[in-house]
Image (cartoon, rainbow, N blue to C red; front, top):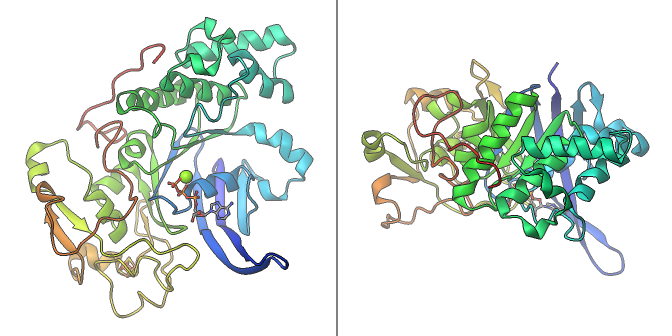
Length: 386
Ligand SMILES: Nc1ncnc2c1ncn2[C@@H]1O[C@H](COP(=O)(O)OP(=O)(O)OP(=O)(O)O)[C@@H](O)[C@H]1O
Ligand code: SF4
Ligand SMILES: [Mg+2]
């Protein structure tokens, strides 16, 4: 059994209209039927462009939003079925690290107070002294000095504040940590240090992460398995290396084509797939395959009418495309869109547009090495006190 199992999870937000009657006139289909598993001790990377529902899915796991349908099961317990009182103590097992470290830390509390608050609420540490010792131990693990205890959030740099955010999650000894864009608010030079810290902590403490990011490079560096979201759905999921070596869904192929390759010869030959059109609204998603309005491989049969299921094509590589096999074999070729040499990116073309807000191609590791891969650069080691 996996540590976390999501089964057909949907989160639909009602769209209300009217002052007196507050009528529901539609729904935002923020998350629309996601099934995935996160194994203990591993990292699941969830990637997708802005508004595709990543944060909502994370919030659904923590039960911070109501799940419209489906099941969220942590370690055998259906989170949605827990009575509110039990959920409060259960929440310790699920912690979140936020994008904006400053915004998520109370400026009027010192670090000891911020970190001990949750511990006291969940009965961790018998007394203040015990809690202080535990906090010191965790602060050392995240690379912060012991004297950080009496200091306030504004006295730290952005990278240090994210370390505090990570420490706040760790002191509660969670089963799963959801990191929502954990480095995107940080300087690029600091991003790699925080990503490496997460990885080191995972190794030394056996942590399990669900890492949400729009930056493919961040997710690649840290993930065992990667899921690609588009308009509330998972369109592809695979072990990290397999996804980068052979993206099978047209959307993933377009995203990957934007990732710079460390090998200069390969980089010179890299071609960029440009998607046509804008991202549709999640309040009015296209029928059939959600991606058919922008898919360069769209076929007249099925694509606009039949929603593709996520199918396992072997080795845990799951793809939601009716024609994934035919596209891979070359039997089906592009019917629209545009491919340009990556070197000529931004130099025009005839109307092809990049996905607005699409996941960034580079970042902490500059499109660098996949987990366990020998190619590409590794982010530098995190020095104490970034
Ligand atoms: N409480 C809410 N009420 C109504 N709509 C919401 C609510 N929360 C999110 N949404 C909508 O749901 C969709 C998904 O939002 P979400 O924040 O999950 O996206 P995201 O993938 O995390 O995007 P980003 O990368 O920008 O953080 C968006 O269209 C958003 O406007
Ligand atoms: S099902 Fe059709 S529209 Fe959807 S990704 Fe596959 S080829 Fe494109
Ligand atoms: Mg988000």
